[in-house]
Image (cartoon, rainbow, N blue to C red; front, side, top):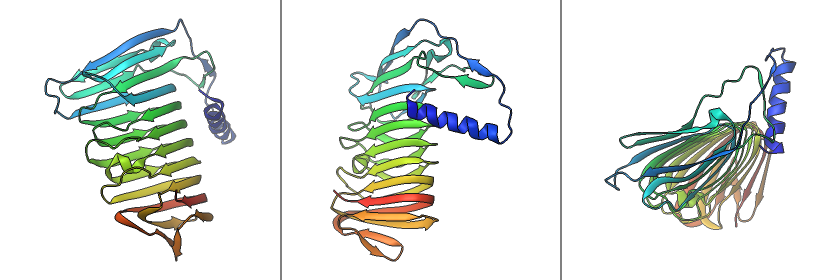
Length: 287
C-alpha cells in the first residue's frame, strides 16, 4: 500500500477517533513467507457463452490486462498473509476469484511487510466483469476485451483504468463506486457503453473520453468534495450540466457556456454528462 492510501486510511481513523468512537486495540497482521500461486480458469466449452467473472480483492495491488490464451483468466497471485490465499470458484458460467476472510479486531496495522499482489491476464470471451476491492493500488487495462457489463467498487484506491483498444462488444452499463481515492479513467469512448454511473467520495478523478465513439453515451457523476477533470477530444459532440454546490468550474479549449450547461460542438454521437458535486473543482478540457 502506498503513502497516499495509508494517509487516507489514517485520516479516516483519526476522524472516527475524534468522534469518540472506540475502535479497540491495534491488530497486527501476522505475515509469513511469500507464496506465489498460478491462477488459471479455462475457457468454457462454448467460447460464445457469456461468463460472469467476479474478482474480490482486499488490500494490496492488482494488475489486469488482456492476453489470456485459451483461458478466461491466467496469471499469478502472491501473498504472505494466510487469509489472502485466493480461492477460485467455478459454477457453470459463473467464475469467482476471491480471498478468504481476514479476521481483524480493532485497527489493522498495514505496513510494508504485507504482500498481496494479483497479476492477471483476461481472455476475450464475452463477459460481465465485477471487481470489488478494498484499499489498493491498481493498473487495469481493459481494452480489447469483450465486456458487456462492468461494475467496479473499491475503498481508498489509487487506480489507473484504461481502454486503449475498442471493447469488442457493446457494453450496457459501466458502474464505478469509490471512496476517498485517486482514479484515472482513460479511453472511455473505447469502452463502448450505453450508460455510466460514477460515484465517489473526496478525491481526485480524471475521466478521459478518448478513443472511438460509436454511439451516444449517457454519464452521471456524483462526488463529494473533489477535484474532477473531464477530457473530451476536440471535434466530439458533448454536453455537460451541473447540479449541487459546485464551487469552481474552468474550461480549456473549445467549450462554450450556456447558462449552467457547457457544450462542445462536434459531429457524430454525443456524450451527455450530468455532474453533481458537493463542492470542489471541475475542469473541462479538450485535446
